[in-house]
Amino acid sequence: MIWKLNLEPLWKHLRCCSLCGMSSCSIDLLCESCWTRLEPFRVPSNYRITGYPFPVSSLYLWPSGENLVTHLIHTLKGGGVPSAYQRIAEIFSISIMERSVTEEPLIFVPAPGKVPNCSDHAMMWAKALTLFWGGSCRPCLKRPQGWEQKSAKIRERRSLGFEKTKTLSNRNSRIIFVDDVITSGATAQAAHIALGAPKKFEVWTIAFRPKEIPL
Image 1 (cartoon, rainbow, N blue to C red):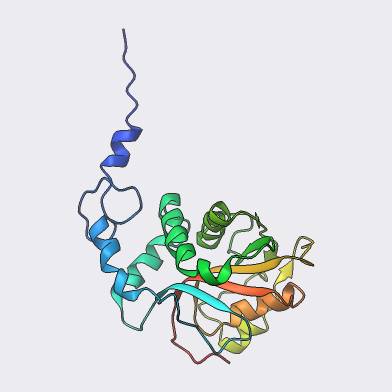
Image 2 (cartoon, rainbow, N blue to C red; image 1 turned 90 degrees about the horizontal axis):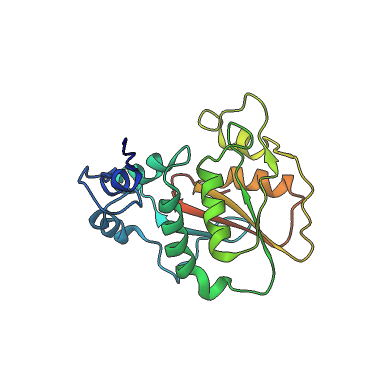
C-alpha cells in the first residue's frame, strides 16, 4: 500500500517570517514580533491626511528611509500572501470604522496593474477589503500601454489617462480607489478623472508616503 501524505499544512506551519527570517506558526507573512514592530508606524485613527482633493485613509506612515514599512510594501508587491492582506485589511478597517460606516454600498476599484486581470497587490488589497466590508470589487481601470509609473513624473502620472473598461454604476455608492501606497496622489487623481469624477470618492492605501508635496 502506498501512503499519500498531504504536506501542505506542514509547509504552512514551517513558513519563515519574510522580515526577520525566523520560523513562525503564522501564515500572515510576518511573525507576531515583526507585526508588533510595525505598530509605531500606524497612522492614528484620529489623524486626517490632508492636501489631496479627496479623502485619503492609510494604515501606515512610510517615512523616507524607513526599512520596516519598505520591506512590507516590497514583499506585498505582485500579490503576496492572501492572509496577510486580510490581516492588514482588518487592522486598517477597525482603525477607520468610526468615520467610515455608512449605509451606502461600497465599490472598491483597485489601481490597474501591469498585467490586465492579474491578482497583483492592489487587486489583493481590494479583495481583502471587500471581504471585510462587503460591497463589490470592480477592477474597471486599465493603464495606457507602455506606461511605467516609476519612471513617470508627477505631472505625467496625473495626466496619464486611465481607460475605464467597465461601466461603473455609482449613483448611490461610495467609490473607494485602492492602492498600496499614496505619495503625490497623481495616480489616484487620474483614477478619479477616469471614473467620471464621482463626488463620493475616497482613497484607501496600506501606506502613506509623504515623499512629495501633494498638488
